[in-house]
Amino acid sequence: MTSIKSQKITPNLPPESSALSFVMTSQEDAEHLKDWEFFAVFDFEGNVAVNTQVSINIIKDVFTHEVVEGLESGPILQALEKTLKECRDAVQKLTPDAKFNAVVAVFKDEHIYTSIYGRSQALYLDGTQVVHVDTGKEGNYAGGSQKIEDGKVMILCTEGFFSKFPPKSLISLTKPILGDDLEELSAAVILKVDAPVAASPAIVLDSSGKTTASHVVPNPPGSVILPRRGLVKPIIIAIVVVLMAVVGYWVLKPKTPNAGSQNTVVEVVPTPQEEYQNPPEVQGELTKKLDEANKVKRVSAQVFYDISITDAKTVPTELALGENYLAVCDTAQGKIYVSTKSVTKFEELPQLFPGVKNLLFEGDTLIFTDDEGVKFYSLATKSVTKSYLADQNYSTIGPSSEYLGFTYALSGDKLVKFSKAGNKLSGTLWTQKSEFTNGVSIDIDGSIYILFSNGNLEKYTAGAKDDFSIVGLDKPIQKPLKVVTNADYKQIYVADGEEGRIIAFDTDGVLIFQIRPQLSSEWSNLKSFDISADEKTFYVLSGTKVFEFSL
Image (cartoon, rainbow, N blue to C red):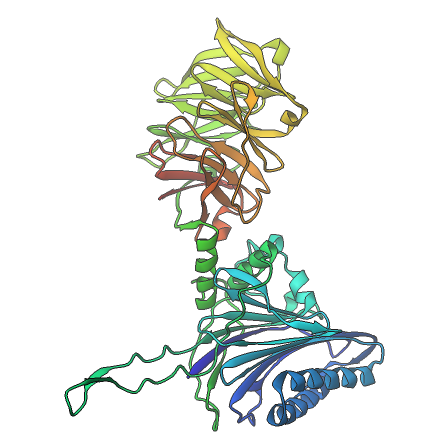
């Protein structure tokens, strides 16, 4: 027997309104004793305020009467089109200028029938892709039918709901969407179909000793197979993945089927009111499939230390990892905080270094730039062992890295190679272009990788730009923070603060994998990261907390 699990998401409506939306399902009708089930989402908007409950009741009465009569007497899609037309006419009697939209899905026998009027939306998960339900359109109507398949997830929603929650607003939410979060024209229902697996034939001996197959029970009807057609829309993928997360936890209990029902059991799931604790069933399935498609590795990152314990006023900006130490800096305060990897306690260095940034380690020596130039700092003696003043020709040192004893840095629109002589830096122009003023990070593995504020990553070898570009990302890098690589690494790593992720590419720019935490809120203020020499242990700075995890 097929089980349809449903989640309604509807707004809190005022007693009177010129705009409203709501969800209607067959499980709400105790008198529904048919061998088919329906789910529908309606919305309309006019210039005259109407009584919301009366209006909803009128539409429900018209819909129930028309759909029952139509499905018993003729082709299903034609019956659904006629039903939506009658509902539209009923609304226009209440408010003649109303803009009416609706979408309905009917589960009957071995198929799902979808009908849309106006600008409503019907989406489904097909393997690892979220696409629009494939329907033929004629005027304001669209309709189609598909064979049911186990495990499909379908979303019916208003256009207002679809546009209300773009990925940027949903990505960090950990609470369910509540009625107060929704505008009057925002409503949706999410459906997941669980169909039992067909029994396998048993091999038995007949009276003559010959083998024969026992009776095979066919798959019962029910579940959504939706065509493997349509364009993949990344924004829809982001919306649906996050939508599953914020809907909350579905406490699923099988209900006794309605008397007379042959095929389907509808399980109603109340809207949750508590914060996220454990991944809900549907969200988990969606996330797993989409993660596989987008090469996402989910990690359980542990808090290594909270720098605010050491300094309550700190606003950390950068992190670096050495063989034995971790270092974090606060550029505005000119402070550096250091911890050994074995003892999780960050201590503030006794000196101040205004403008400190570009942290990196060579052994137990911390190298960084500040407002004066480049400094080498011994953590054993807690003192500066080498200090090089900036070259007056390139007095501004932007993002930089060390390679073979040289400092490579952006200075305005120039990429400069600095040698060190006495206590001064001596710069040589390596290459120049106006876009360098937007560089945010540099690292070197023999070639120089420059990360730009627009998310582009460029590769330079011997001063010349290589033919290199990022390939394979589901979403572009929106808030680039840091690029990390070296001659011994197999991959190039980039942090994206907007998406709370670390991305690994090969040396041609092809996506290898992405890293995200199990809880997206953990990296909601991602700032920096670094990686161990074997590329297995990662340290991440998010807010004032340092996280640790291993692959």
